[in-house]
Length: 243
Image: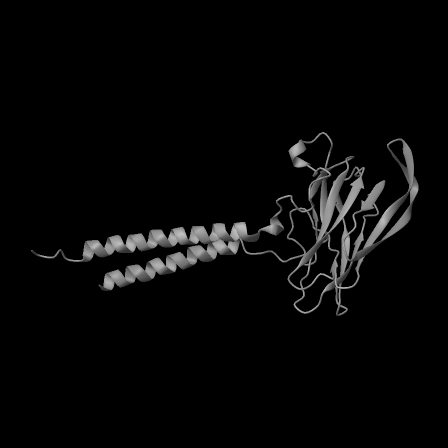
């Protein structure tokens, strides 16, 4: 009996450790502003969405400011209407001008500012996407979009830190769009077609219910194996009834 109890305790501890390890590897990352999809092709056109989650428990997101990188001007930038939000487009001079499809680009969009009207602010526990069409995409390895997120209580989240190659993700990372050379494999630089909904790129930070159900199934399976082993051990230790 003592051995059986020790076996049960050891099995319970093993199951707890395995479950903690599995859940630890798949725990939710800190929510921050991101651009989706995260990869595209240099010289191409694409539809992207800036995904803005609300991190406050008491305040709503009322304004989102996205700064386009100065070292990577884009010839054409257009926004899609978002119900309940207005958008202001700021431009800057490109000096010296750069050639885009045979024309000289002397002016480029420098900043996009979305402001909520009425009751459209992003409330606690919600997120909002702001679609943008851009192209031709510049001949650079990546575009970093420094972003400011303003809340109804006056607080501002500054998503402006640039990640470093091979380093840990910064505390307040800016959205990053990685650009592959046009000769690269199409799968490494796929951009959704015009009819693809922003954010439908199967991205990480949208782990959602599917991952949770997968984890629950794995833990339940491990529990079944442990309990089955205990039952087998008990049958071996219990004396056989005499006739």
